[in-house]
Length: 244
Ligand SMILES: [Fe+2]
Image 1 (cartoon, rainbow, N blue to C red):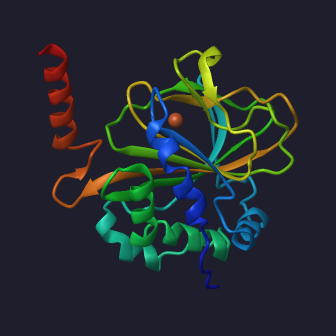
Image 2: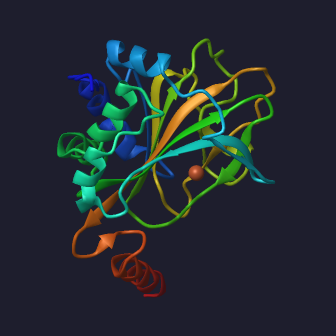
C-alpha cells in the first residue's frame, strides 16, 4: 500500500477550536482546506462511485446513499482493522480509514473539541443526488459524541443546499450555519438534545460527495459513553440538577 504523510492541515483545525467551543446553542465548527492538497486530490479522484455496494436510505426523513466502511466494534481490536484493507477502496481511502484510528489523529481531535479519550465509532461515505435531503434531527445519544462530515464536491454555488446545516431548532427556518464550500471542507458538531442538523432538499442535477464519521469518548472500563452506565449516570445527574 502507498504511504502518505502529513495528510491533515492541523493548523487549520486548531485555529477553529475556540469557535467550535464557543458556538451556541450547541458546539459546532467549520474548517476549510482540512486535508493537505495532494492527499485531498487523491481522495477526490478515488471517491467511490455509487454502485451495488451502497445502500439507499429512502424514507420520509431522508433520501441519501451510504456506503459503510468496517470499523471494529471494540476499539481495542484496532490491530484487526489495520490488517483489513477494503479492496473496493483506493490506497488513499484505506490509509485515511487507518489513520483516523491512530492516537495522533484522535489526540488532535480531543484537543480541538475538548472531549477526551476519543475513538472512531463509525465511518461511512454519504452521497446525495438530485432529490436528496435529510430532515433536521438531533441524535442525542450522549454527551461525548462528535459528528464529523467532510466534503468532496467541486463547483458548489454559495447558497446551494448540500452541506450539513446546523439549526437552532428542528425547523429549517432556524438554520444558523450551512457549509457554503464543499471542496475540501469539514463540518463538525457535538451531539446533544438540541444539536439540530440536516441537509436541505437538492433540486439541481448534482452529486454531493461526503464522508460522515462518528467519533466518541470510549474507555476500556466503561465502553462508549453513549451506551454505558456512564451515560445513564450523566443523565441521572442532569435530571437531578434540573429538579434540584
Ligand atoms: Fe445526523
